[in-house]
Structure formats: C-alpha cells, structure tokens
Length: 288
Image (cartoon, one colour):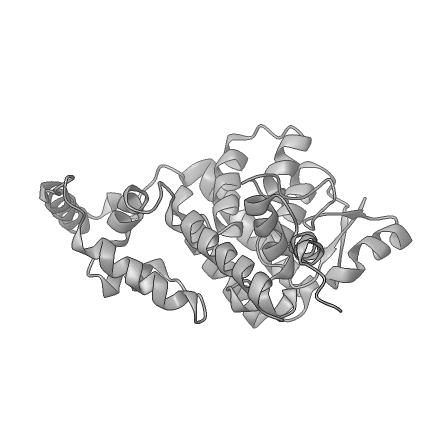
C-alpha cells in the first residue's frame, strides 16, 4: 500500500504512518509532496491521499485523521485509544483534552525544526510513537513522583494548598478582565497565545486557568475560543481587505493553509475561497 500526504509533517502525518505500519500494513510506503500536488501525485503513483481536505482519510468535526484511521480499521487496542486523544489534542490545538497533548506538540514541532528531510523526520518520529505506545500500554497509571517520598510529600502539600483556596463563584475574578485585554491586544498583532505564559502573566496556575476558562468565555475551552476569534478576524479581513487567503491565514495565526481551511469550514460551513466568492457575488456592481 502506498500513502501520500503534504510535506513537512508534524503530528497526524507521522502518527498515522506509525499506526498504519503497526496495525494495518507493515510494508506500507509513505510519500510527502507539496500540498497542491497531493491529489495529482496520488493518481499518478496510485497512492492513497491522507490528512488533506476533501479526501476520505482526513479530519471530521473535532476529530483528526488519526481518529479516522482508528475507526476505519476498527483498532480496539486500549493503548491506541489513549494515544488517539493525545494526538487529537496536539494536532487540533486542544491541549486541554489530554495533559500529554502539549508535550507531544512541543516535541513534534521541535523535531520538525531540527530535521528538514521529511523521510528522516518520519523515521525518527516513529521512535516517538513506539515510546508513547509502550507508555500507554504499560506505564499509563504510573506517576513520576510515586517512588520519591520527599517529592511526593511536597506534591501532597501543594495539592492540599490548591484545594484550600476558595473561589467566589458569584463574582467574576479579576484575571478574566486581564485575560480579555491580553486576547484583545493580540487580535490585531500576531495571534501568539501561550497558555503557560499567559498563566504566568496573570499569576495563575495553568491547570486552574484551563479549568476555569470556559466559565467566562462563551462556554468554550481555551483552544476553541482562540480558534473562534481567529476565524472572526479572518472573516473581517476577507470582508474589508485585499489580502490573499494565504496572507489572511498567516495574519490570523495559521502557519498551515490546510489547517486554516479546515477550521474556517468548521466554523462557517464554507471554505475560505467559497466564502470569498459568495461575498464578491453579493456585492452590488458599482460600474456605470
């Protein structure tokens, strides 16, 4: 079996090949090409395209391509269920759904930065998922502190301290206003949101901020809310500027055109290009 996807893989485009090799076809071959060549090369090379829009093996709703492979091939291994949540969180910026998701994203992004050859990157990435599978299979419930009495004692004290802090549910905490100002400041700049840095700026524990965020931000988690305002900004730019869709994707914090298209369609029901065409059609003809 031959599989083809877009170049410069990070999460799905390494996790899915690992999954295929381990559970579907150990002799599978993988091809990386520029995004706009995937479909043409797939036909030419008789390869199956994946992790791009409008093909079978892709994202569906809030699920990533890895999720679809698990469902398609009916993989029931409990360790894969654990890994799937981590991969989904890392690949869709939903770091709150799994505490390991942010770590997987950081490792994957750093790996892609250090290794410029996609096939060498895939080879090295396979080792990451082998390790993740062993952890999910044998070590999932093991904690780093469990064999250290001194560190465990400190951890217990810290946990009791957090539980002892009382929050007034009737009054909106002061950090909510500060956080809204931080987000607003970013809307017209580079859309750089780092939950840990923001937590530090607000003098809050990251876990606390992640847990409490949805209460004050339209019942959305941090990742969903940031994606919403990115798309709101993209719509505004489409309506009021002459920027290309590629430029708008960059200006709203999407380094990947495919990711921008997928999230935009998820929020609006249309791709950015379709939305722009419909907008142009609806404008009155001002020519005399």
